[in-house]
Structures are given as C-alpha cells and as structure tokens.
Image (tube, rainbow, N blue to C red; front, side, top):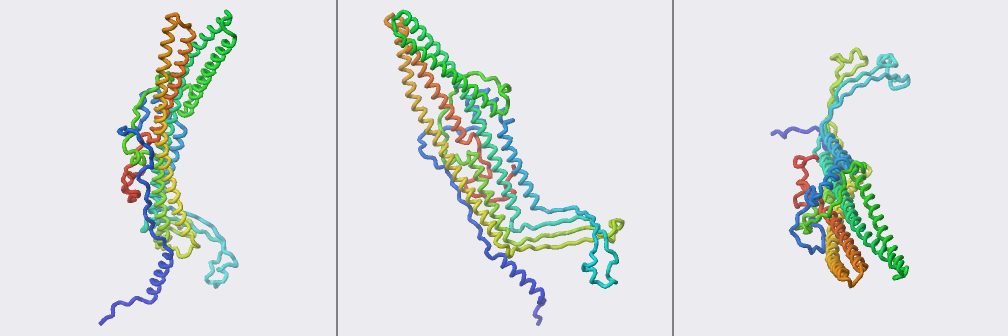
Length: 499
C-alpha cells in the first residue's frame, strides 16, 4: 500500500521558514478598530421658536428680492480671490485621488541606458586565470527594453489610500461650498449695511433741517433779547451733533463700497450702480427638526465628516502594511556590449520574477505609523465634534439675537407711536396759536430720533437674518454618500463618485 507522494525535506524547510517568517511578521498585529460613532444631532438648546419654516435655498439671497444684490453675488462667485483659493484646494485634492488610483494599478516603463566602464586591475577579475580574463579594461554596456510590474492589493492597502484621497477631495469640495457661503453672506451684510446707511442719511438730513430751523428761531430770540445766549449755543451744539452723524454715515457708506469691491474682486467703478432701497422684509420661522437636520445642512460639518472617514481609511492602509506584499515583475529587453548588435535577435534578455515582501523587524516603524493614524482619527473626530458644537451655538445665538431684536423693536414701536402722537399734538397747538413753533420742532426731532433707532433695529434684524441663513447652511445639502444615519458607511469605490 502506497504512502502517497513524499515532499522533499528541502521544500518542507522552505515552507516552514516562510510560515515562521509570516508568524513573526504578524507578531503584534493590531486588531481592527471599531467604526467611529459620531453624533447624530446638534446640541441646540433654548429653541422655543415656531417651526414650519423652510431651509435656505441654494441661492438663499433671492429671498430679499434685490436685483443689485443678485448681481453683486454673481460677480463675486465668478471671480472672487477667496473662491479661487478654494477651487485650487479642491483641484489639488482631485489630482491626489488620481495619483492614489494610479499607484494601485499595473505599471509599465521603458528603460534604456548606455554606459562605459573600466575594469579595475586589482578587482575581482585579477584573481581569475588568464584564460578567463576578458583581456581588456574598458567595455561598453547597452540595455533597451520594457519593464512591467504589478503588486497584488490583497489586503486593501492601496484601495484604502484611494478611498482616503476621495474623502479628502469631498472634504475640499465641502470647504469650497463653505467658502462660497461665507462670501455670499459677507456681501449681503455689507450691501444691506450700505442701504441702512443711506436710509439713516436721508433721515439725518431731515433732522438737520429741523435742528437748523430751531437754531434760526433761537438766534432771532437772542437778538430780540427774549432768550439768553445759552439757548443759541445749545442749538449750535445740536446742529454740530447732527452734522457729525451725517459725516459718520457718509464715511461708513463709502467704506462699505470699498469692502464690496474687495469682496466681489473688482474695482469700485466696475460695481453695478447702487440705488437706495427700503430694507426688505422676510419670514422669521425656523425650519422643523433643526437639531437633527443641521448636521446635513452645514458644509463645514460635512467637510469634517469626510476627514474622519479619510482618517479611518488611512488607518486601514496602515494596518494592511503589516501583511506581506506580493508583486510580479517582468522585463522584455535587449542587452549587448556593442550598439551595433543591440537589436539582433541574440541580444534578447527577458526576465520574470515574483517578489515577496514581509516585514519582520523594522524597529517599530509600522507600529508608530499605525499609532499615528489612530491619533489622526482622534483629531478628526475632535474637529467634527467641535464643528457640531460651533454650529449649534451659532444657530442658538442667532435665534436668541433675533428674539432680543424683536422684543426691542416692539418697545421701540411704542415709543415711536408716542412721539408721533406728541408731534401731532404740538402741531395742533401751534395751529391754534397756543404754543410757538419750537415745541413742534422739538417733538419732530424726537420722532426722528425714534425712527432712526427703529431703522437701526431693522438693519440689525436683517443682518441677523443673513447670519441665520449662514448658520443654517445657506442651501448646502450633504451628498448622498453621507446621507444615511449610520456613522460610517461601507467604503467601496464603486459606490462613490469622484468629484
């Protein structure tokens, strides 16, 4: 009865050596890390506002129905330097994806070289018998061929690097959206700040006419020795105060034009004509489920989420470094000592081989690399958590500010109504000749002061609404690749789209 084929002892020794080497290389092999659990809702507190509002649209500034603002933002998005930087960062990340993808495929290189070398008189050739020595010191060497190589990605190291590069490109894309939103909101705030300056300027000029009229009456009464000079000085001080306010508003308006030109990225002369308009009104309801949906509506949070996933993929690649690498190499080439015979059939020198790389001892390099990848995950998760906290605080701050402005505005309306009633009463007394014109002018000035204060509150409410639109994401929506409720998705190149 046959005992079956026997394996040679030499082959057994080689197999045993490879197994031992594999076990030695896998010593201290890190265990696979559990998926990172990320928060699913923003920690927003103190939201007692009425829901039912809509999330911002992608072109959220259209809610203000101002064609000049639309033109300014369109120009800025086409040529702003800040967006150019964001575009460059995204393009760089996209090329990194291509670079990582190219590293994971087959490689073919053309090789060709020619060299001339001298054999040493005291080298290894000098120990050969005279019959075996070449009989010359100088010789030429010519090589020509194609070299091909392919490394098997059995453990997913290259695939993880490609996915990490894709995640970084998606993060850069989200950062570009965040940069665009910051630019859009800055332009809207600056533009409506200019509009508020124009409205306050018109009101201040009306008030200046009233104060100057008071000054004329005071001067006449002083000349008639009906009042002391103190009343005239008081009127002159009030006139100077209003003129100072006008100068400040004119300077503020000019500075806002300079800021608009810088934001748009064009000279001030090339901006569209700015025409004073009444400040717009807008709905004030918050959208439903702000706490749950905010994470998917903020580009900065999405960018942080992509970075977490990129860090996880880098950890997968670092873990795969502990496994052996197997590559196939082939060379179809020509070799000759003379260039005249290089292309002859007999100069062919093909070769092929298999290379196995298994790390056994590297002074802790792989473990340090793996630990570094773990720390990158911790940093990315910390940044993500902070982004959510910042977003929640941003929304809560804008909502609280809006409530404060609304409360102040309601009280200011009461004061304005009282001032207008007093103005009408004083005007009636002047018509009935039971009071002089000064009382009516003083009441008129008080009314203008209340209107200016109300105008400032309206401007603050508009600026707050712009900030709230930015805090709510400004029309951004998270890509479908991150839209599910699981903290970490299955990573497959087939299920992703490279930006």
